[in-house]
Length: 405
Image (tube, rainbow, N blue to C red; front, side, top):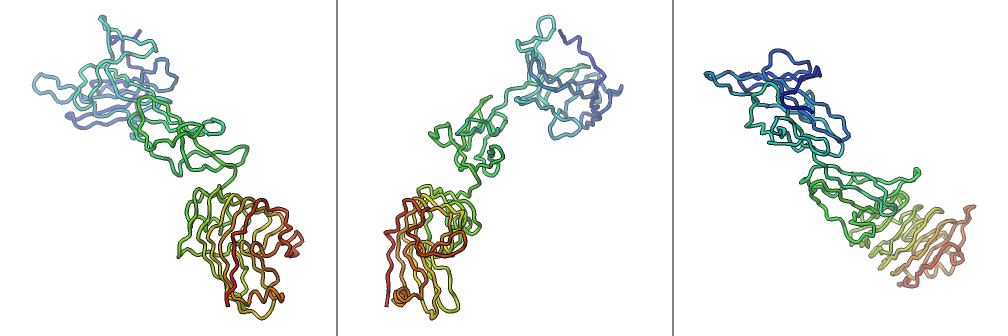
């Protein structure tokens, strides 16, 4: 058993500290030289803790004497994570609370705890305490770190963790939130953190660590890469870029929000929410013949489901002498393979009476209160959209066509 009188200096790499008049210290990575008065050992006091943290050494000079009284040397340097030449060791699962002198028994021997670590006595005050003994050992007080574990709601698997000291406040993760991937397939985090796997309550961020605690945070994911949408601007951007869209709230268009007749080939999961208040005007003439519909063309890999389009206001001016226009209030074209499911569409479509005449005499190739036409796999266009077999539980009965003189 080590005792105070048995402390020895092993020929390990040391840090030589030179203090001039008790003010200036300098360290080096060589063995101790004869030009120091005291040697301080920083012992990490691991005991049975599994880790690799060998002792570090610091040589000190005695300041100039005032008369015959020894002043003792102040330890102005300690192992520090920010000091490349005298770096504090790290031990997984622990943080270093401070440095201490050991507790000794009546015979001057070290008092050991059941875990093999030296029992600590007085905490060393680096501002006030002084070294007077030729060989002084300071022992680390390693305490269990606090841990925040991020767990998958579905599987309970750990996705990541934050390890820090008690008293540290953890903010809600944003771009740094853990990710999930299964067999190379990415998953999208749905944006909420929970206290349990049942999603009973939102996790209370910001969260301040207690002493040595482990706290679990649950995250919910959805298979695939998704754009989580809460705003009009995010919704329009995701449509323009062909992203898979997952609505997290109703999308309410204002008077200045412009709709652009998007073509779409992704998955739009409305998640039971609505897109409200879209206003759009189309002009059809010999020079400009747009695809008339809320969506221009819905391509063959598109899947639009569980969403309502409410209070849609569409209007059209018509001045076209040659035939060829196609119009559908929800979409101008749908391609073979696209699926619409649980989609509700309601609003008004206002157009001049001449459109009604154009539909009757064939100037409009296809005109429908739902979808103008569909294209089969060969690219041929058909107007029998009502027979399209990939639309399920869709309701457009609330869409009204108004012809104005």
